[in-house]
Each structure stands twice: as C-alpha cells, then as structure tokens.
Image 1 (tube, rainbow, N blue to C red):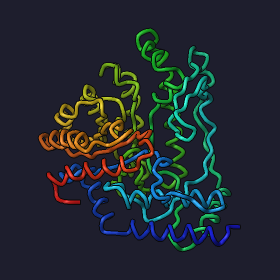
Image 2: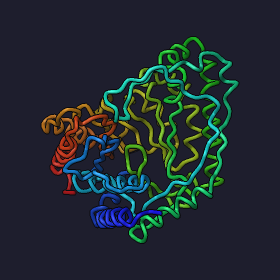
Image 3: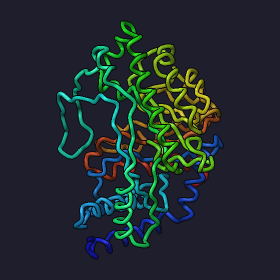
Image 4: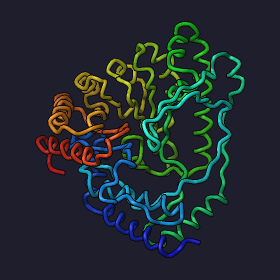
Length: 409
C-alpha cells in the first residue's frame, strides 16, 4: 500500500512536470531537433547530459520526502526534470508521459568483467576508476562465450504498472515500453575484459584473435536485436545518449523507426585502415538494421570521417573536445549532423563565460562556414564542485552566443 502523502507529493510534481512539458516552448525545441536531424539549417539545439545530480541540489529543490522507496525514485525523477526545465537555458525535450520499461532478463554472453581495484573521488559519484583483470588473455576464454538469451517477465510488468497507476493516478499518462534506441559499443566492453594496451598490441601480434572476439560480440548484438523485433514495441525516444533525438520516421516500423548509437572510444589512436578492419566492417551489419546511425563519443574522429561515410544510414557524427572542429565541419558539410561536445573540464570548478564564449564561437563559425548542421552537447560531467551555477552559466552563455547568429530561442 502507498500512503496518501506519497501519492499527493508525486502527483503534484507530475502535474507541474506536465505543465512545463506541454508548452509551445517544448514544441519549438522538438521542431529544432527534427529540423537538425533532417539536415535543415536551423539554430542548433543545446543539450546538457550526464549531469552529476547529487551535486545540483539548489535551495533544497531536489530534496525527496516520500517514505516509499519506489515513490522516492519517481519523486526524484520529476524533481530533476523540473529543475532542468526551470533553470537551464537548454533544449532537452521531455515526454508528456511517464514511461515504465518492461522487465527483461538476459543470460549474458558467458563472460563478465572482473574488477581488481577501484578508486573513488567520493562515496556518491558513480564516476570511478577501475583496474580490470584480463579475462580474454587466451583463446580458451572464447569457448565460454555465447549469444544472450532474453526472457520477458509479464507478471513483473503487471505489478509495476499496478504500482505506478496507484501512485500517479490520472496526473500523467503512463506507458509500458520495451525499446527506444540501441546503444552499441562493443569495443568499450572488450577493453574492460581485455585492456586497452593488449588490444592495441593484438592488432599487430594477434589480429585473428581480435576478429574472433568482435565476431562474438557482433553475433550477440544480432541476437538481441532479433529478440527486440520479435517481442517488443519500439517507441520514439528522447533520450538517445547525449542527444534527445526525435526522428520523422513513422513509429511501428520496427528498428527502422529508431537509431543505432555506436562508438569505439579506445580506437581514437589507430589508423583509419585498422578502424575499418576491426570496427566498421563489423558495425555495418548492425547499423543497417536501423533508420539512422549516430557515431562517436569522446574519441576524436577528424581522420576517420571518410571511412565513416561507408555507414549507409549515418546521420550524426560526434566531434569531441579533442577533435578539430574546423576539420570536422569541412568534411561533414551538409551531409551529416556534427554533434559538438565541449570540454566538461570547463565547468568542473567554475565557469568562465569568456572561455565558453570563445569555445562556442569556434563551433558556430566553423559550422556556418561549411553549411554544416550541428548541435552542442555538454556531457560526461563528472563534477561541478557542488556548484549548480556552473551549468546554469554555461547554458546561458552558449545561448547568448547563438543569439548573435540566429533567431532567439
């Protein structure tokens, strides 16, 4: 049973959330994303993602008071969303509904990470430093690997929906869903199993072994996507990693109505030829199952854009803080969206508006010069030193710069 006080608290927050979501401003931001992702010239969306929310409690706005643990999680969900829409001059879009993900279990792939050591900067931050044991040192490890098997749990879905319906009442529509987009980064996983340096050495010493490993992960990805297509409703999402990404593709078309998000962050130092051999040649069969592909995260891709053009549905390319934005914009032109990732170190201690202005102007001028559609995504924010104003100032400064080149928000 949920006590009436918890219901009242959560329902009032849900109503406030809906009053902020169901507005012309949200519609304008949604249209901006649609235009950008359709390669139309428009004011670029500005996004804040991966925020250290435990450092953002300003004036007690994120204090949770519900007694029930699950009710507190819902309360926190609404409080952070309301905080975002209230304080940040940014364009993240929010859905006019509360989504409940279906209960699905996986058998795994037969091999798991083994942590040898872990170091933290504090007890709360989920950003930690880990040392992993090499569990893929020899070929015998591959014998343990298999495609994952997934199992639906409709009884858990029913129980979850019953709980959230009782908690939220008619304050917000509730939707049970199974899948919105695919996050695919096999090499990021393999580095935790094998290690970055051994993988780079293997490219020279044991390339056949690396091919066997990535073949296993590619097979596992297709097994997961087969399950999704056969069993799950695919809905349009707004939480594609680092970028809310509504698309104009009609819902109900399976994976062809959504995005594949991929990267190989440890491959920033290898040649385009090796990138094609060990990453792209395997990614293609996965990516082609989707409507669009968004490639790149923290790795610089200046020297790999020509190779990436081989992805037939490529729509967005990440331009990290370590990439040359002028070079990226020139190569991308009007063919794809350039997703610019400013340096999160610039908000870690304090925010210097002049530095943010220069950083933003560099991106704006490069993209305008080459007619390149783009967005600006501040992400991987591991700390703001418990200064919420760092992000508030960052977002306002970026938009002040954009106001000089585009119509107002």
